[in-house]
Length: 117
Image (tube, rainbow, N blue to C red; front, side, top):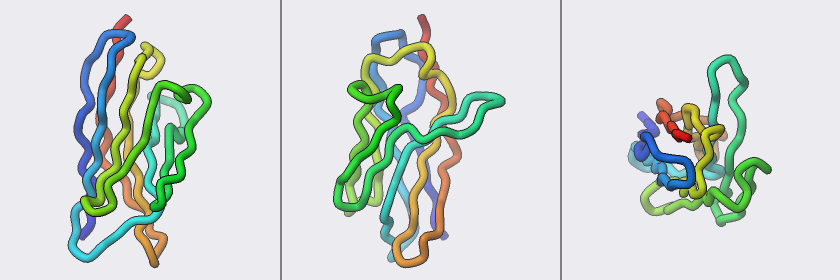
């Protein structure tokens, strides 16, 4: 059974940094695209950043230049380095991973990021 376990959320002052991690468990699995999404109350879940297996990345305009997504394929882990955080970045962040050869999508449980002004 595959599970995505997120960590690294928390409370930080505006201008500060946080690093989110998402580790996928499950033996014998590997993943293609991995991504981070976020969702505010009452809003749709939005893509923050995505990364392909070979390292190509894409970002939402609102986070370009501040956030960096990376991954470790050997560990089935994806990271999100968030710098210059703003109060509007406050919300729950979810990781997403697409299993190779099946295209089945998995979601993490979400981690809260709160940026105080």
